[in-house]
Length: 262
Length: 246
Image (cartoon, rainbow over all chains, first blue to last red; front, side):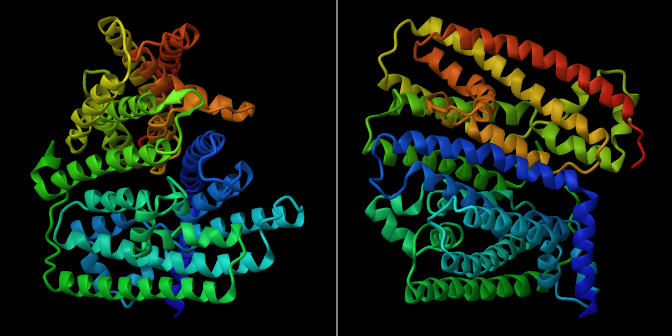
């Protein structure tokens, strides 16, 4: 158990040592978020979407979506690089689960982001500036976003695991993000999609990663509706875990750790 | 060009870029199915900005975007030293060391979208517009290159700056939006939107025949000023390079 605690410690050390790197990651979002927000303010002014969103709630929506994107995403390219360069063979000899190591090394970043975002929300609630966020919604949101983070973790392990067969996985990873773009809620709030696409999105995992958790902040959700959403998220987590486990077992069986550095 | 040796990945990228563009088109189609225009911008004007933004991303990829991946890596590994030893401008060597062919498909895709959008718009004096567009497109590329140079100058001092890529890609991706159609009273947002407008909205406007001279002159001046400033900054930062990581 102690080795896992050390991994978390290392993640904090690395984050603080390369803090400028972390800053630039956040800075990237500070461009994208206001641009998308301003686009939506312009669109809402035309009457699009009825009364589902106001510029005010859209602002909260985009701040929360940006946080969710950050919080739930893992970098599959790190895994792919370790596999490609043969470094994975060293990890296989070490007395830890690679899945756990991969997750724990990102803990510091998640904790800092989480603290920043929760502080921001509490500031809004205590300051009474955002009437739409209730304490219950906050709690439901926290549960949902943590489940969404695990969905992101297993997705990343699946995409990274493809490097056992393919030298580069950039294409696959981007393909997921691209297709998901329309359904995750980053480009358009999912509930503003046309009916046909809305039906399709209900059967896909995308909206449960970013859009659904954020909805807990914007509208009151009944207990049973929340349970239903959590159940769907947990189902996707289980499916993701099983698929990741299958890919990794199959990949490691044929892994020669002899790939060239490209 | 070694990306092309991994054919599966290369073709996946082709599909990714095409789908990515289609997703954006679908998004604007969903919006414009219910709305006639956004702050005076019609559907095909918006799609033209999307096409121009995508084209700029594609041209950047096959020219100098590899700079953002390779340079921090070379600083960290110490391989940058070899560039200093060669009888060629270091900035040029670092910026144009390799060509990223993964994104090649972006260019024909965006040209198709631009031509399609132009066909749907009532455009007059197209040859003059195209000439103006090409000049402003060059300015956009210079602005993007200068911003990248400024950002990468940081890598001489702060060795690990991988996340600059995320930041820069965010900037490049925002150019696909019709930012000039946004209305904001915030000074911060206005300041943030100015370079994005110059990069994609202004060339797109010229292409469909709207010559907004203050913006056009601003783009040209910004391109020259930013290039000179970034070049000066790069040379200064280079003096800080200690080759410690090698």
